[in-house]
Image (cartoon, rainbow, N blue to C red; front, side):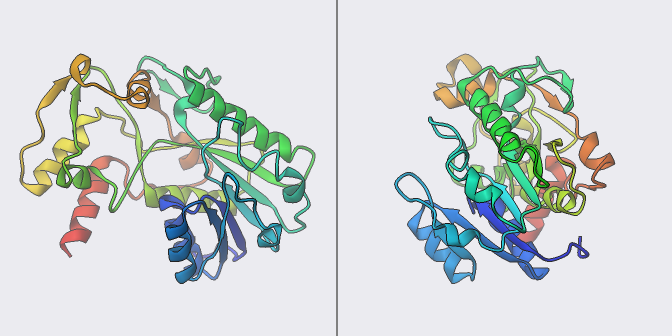
Length: 293
């Protein structure tokens, strides 16, 4: 990825994942700007040298921050009224003279429940929740915003994100890890740095209208990473809790109501991506080794 030609990236939502990508791009000579609604994070981003702006409910974006943008990522979740940047900023975004690439970060919730079946990006979206429908509507809004332009819009459906500071190791340390017994339940995951690798590969090879599953190739039980992390820490994993007795939040119940296995052939075959962490095992082992070092 070192031959990725430097530009100016603007990110709606410079959070955990996108800040790690921003650092990688900055090391390659890129300019990176973006938004956050959190005052403390805003100060930290600015101290780190990023052109960070406040943006959120009651915090309109200063359009001058978009000047010079060549690449744009939207990572903010939809609100009740829809995507927070489109259509409110569509006209200003379409007017950016240097913009050539847009990435919208979505989720596999747009597929709905597939009973554990393997699915690829050709599967028709059938959301089974309001959250899934809002994501699908946002995907379509971003495609529509740049229809009949030369801007390449791509959608990336991200599996469950983990990485340094946000993994099963941290859940166990802080007493938040739970093993819920629901036979047959599986999820894909994706290491935070593999997300950046996929996005950078797409920047090098834009494909207007493309949709990508961004996930590891080894879906597994949600309990497996917790058990692997417990082995690394040398502790016993938490006891199994029957699903019916887990007392899950509405969001948690929605999460467990869907089961699917994501195929990732497209990011490999089309973008030439080689995941550094093809399963939770490699990812957790690397985090553990980095912590010990």
